[in-house]
Length: 385
Ligand SMILES: Cc1cc2nc3c(=O)[nH]c(=O)nc-3n(C[C@H](O)[C@H](O)[C@H](O)COP(=O)(O)OP(=O)(O)OC[C@H]3O[C@@H](n4cnc5c(N)ncnc54)[C@H](O)[C@@H]3O)c2cc1C
Image 1 (cartoon, rainbow, N blue to C red):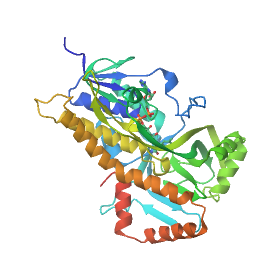
Image 2: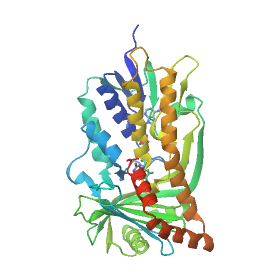
Image 3: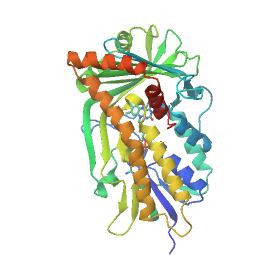
Image 4: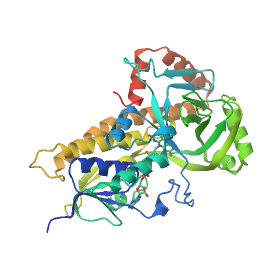
């Protein structure tokens, strides 16, 4: 009997939903396995209870924006804020600045776009509702190919016996929202200090007065910061940001995520029963959020896999190992430079040694004036290389 689906996608996060929509555009029949609401939580370490509140906003690059626009799922209005400039500060006077107008050979409107997560998820869910090629299901079903998009704690990846090489940073990222005294003017701000990384991502459009905070700190400091009153927490962030946006006040809840660098040893294969599978998104790889690249990498997986399957020779099935290996090769190559830079930066700025501290800040100054190197890094982060 014919299988009901060409592709069964396990996990309806942003990666799983985007992939389902893109494969449907290629006329493939897709089963999308949606987990019960409880597991839609921020990923917490196994010893901690899940926290169901997701208050993040993602920095998405030009490649991700193009993909989501192609799906008609790019949120509108103030749910998207273009980042026209970015200022990064080191801990001993180092400073790097990026501006959209000079980052690439052609002027660009934005370095990145800060997108409200809830808004993006709802655009994708609505599009899926109107796509007859996709059926949302509550349990996996047989298909030509299974794509695992279950995020970093994927149980299917474990069932497949795939090892996930993980290095914990011993850090948590605290996410929160602030209303600010001064408008952000489309500027993203980031500070590296004593192993901590703090970022303010602009929200609510170019004239907005609020930012999304991502503050990566040691586990013990995360506990202390989370225990502070909203007023004291805002004061701590205000001090750490040298009052860059004036007085801050917390809006809504705070949440925290454990941070790790991880990569699956295999991204594609077949089960003993001959069922073909691939991994995509956080199920395949996780990076430190300091560069805002995790989902951008996941959406690059989506684009590559959909293109590989959608443009295959008519006589090849979606389970053809040659196709799946070519997807794996291409995406490992795409991940390598981004993963190495995120990991390297985190480790470099975690070194307390004074000599290293001076060198890294001098390095930032050198990089600031490096011309082509700086332009290349900016293009890489923007998904344009
Ligand atoms: C603090 C922080 C800030 C970040 N900021 C950025 C940023 O600015 N830009 C950026 O690009 N990235 C950012 N990231 C990374 C980004 O969050 C992830 O890369 C992205 O969410 C991965 O999407 P995903 O769909 O692969 O996985 P997930 O978002 O984890 O989704 C997986 C889905 O699968 C479901 N699921 C799990 N198990 C099962 C199962 N057994 N069966 C069925 N379904 C299952 C889950 O419920 C969930 O819906 C950040 C990460 C953190 C921690």
